[in-house]
Image (cartoon, rainbow, N blue to C red; front, side):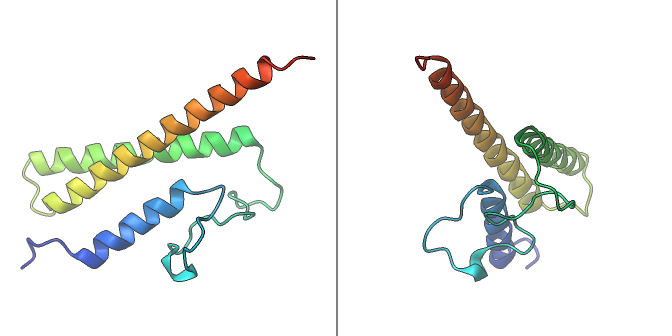
Length: 125
């Protein structure tokens, strides 16, 4: 039964991705057990240093993470299409969905930043 999707693994990966996309605030009603281990919590520093990261550094790290997720997805898809027996179709699909969700989240963040920039630029002095 190795062809069947391991539901627990899928749920853990989905929760991890959800936690990674919610860097700035934790949704109400989400229990601590639902947050993936190693996820960034509100008020927690993203970098290893104790100094607060600049917004630019935070955005660069997020973009790098999205790129890494897309590279992993492409690598798994290529390995599967080449017939690698160690790559399961469920892993390919999960990686593909992770890449898609992370990219869409990044696009939404970009759109909000552009909207905020336009609002600031249109403010009367």
